[in-house]
Image: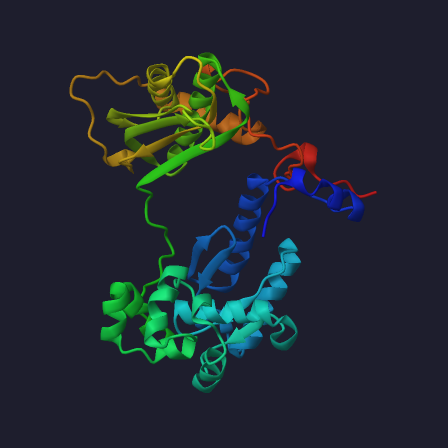
Length: 369
């Protein structure tokens, strides 16, 4: 269970506990390094989340036993990144996820690797593994399965496919089949293009005036544009919202939707629309605690339909490339729009105890003494 730091300050002080705010830049870079190591050992790597990936083992094994090959990967990742990882092996994604969970739960027994290719081992493990711990089985589904006598993973694997479909649609049926060793999902080494992206943040302090709210919204719009530009995408629709605390009666809450035609990832266009939306939704006297921007209807920039009557600025691609290049080399916000404002603002999320960006910022690289 988590708790706000201000509620446990005495405990923190008494035990000398170190606490840190999230550093997403560090997490993303370590994720990139981690997957680079996996790619050196396997031809097929699928990045599943910020801290998890799937990969094909046969290409990797090179004559080694599966478990020994997996231990080699653990050693390589530890050597290259310092990250402690666990590996679950199985003929399907779902089985590899269960194996990974077992490896984490019983580190001393398995030494970081669990292989569920063995049917007898699966049956023994499944008899003790709660169904609610299976990847894809949420609390609501656990309750729906209970009247059927399904309490362990072994019970779930014994469920007839047609019953699984009735209880949880084709998704549960596939999960049951995968637990029984039948692969139902293909690998996706190349992630599917995003259909939408969002940038939302709570404010460090409540915001009252329009100028501050507009600046905060514009900053989020620029960041959203940067994200889709990095994927080679353009947006056709923009949604902006702002609201106050949900615990306060009569707190302001509003949103606006706008069409981007032609599709674009230009921060100047997107920020201008976001700023106008903010002006339209602002309530004088309102106290705002959060705002955000969502870009939808994403499509490849190379495939979007141009506006017949618009005159494109031939300098825009070069300008945006230069902007992205400078910000990538010297740090985000080195070059920014004037409408974003400058310096630290009250609406910036408080990250006073953020972990340093050890691996991406030269001024924060740890110094050996």
